[in-house]
Length: 99
Image (cartoon, rainbow, N blue to C red; front, top):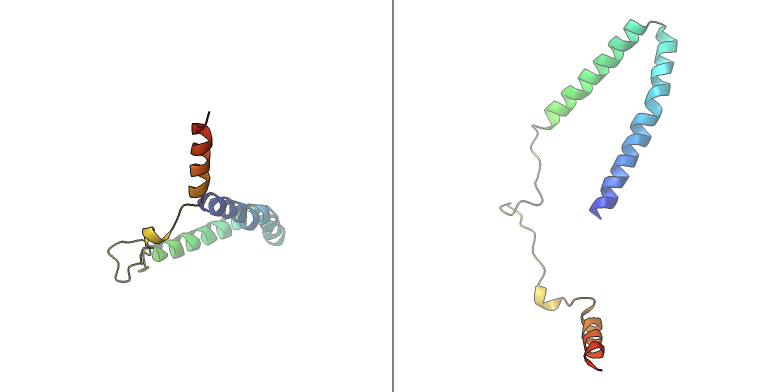
């Protein structure tokens, strides 16, 4: 699941970030018609986003994978779960043992 989620994250970053950014900068440049003002506006947007991110990293969040958490996640009972291939491995070893 982790590789799939990383792939989906990367694709969504490209779809929602890289793809529309060039046309939006072009539309902004056409509206402003001054490269210095366009660069200033885009830099201000970048600093605003960086400021929001910087504030966000200091907000308290819940670590769901912390073992010393107040709300621990209960582990499953290993004795009640059986491996999916348990019956298959026994059949394979018996067939290999027979000449």
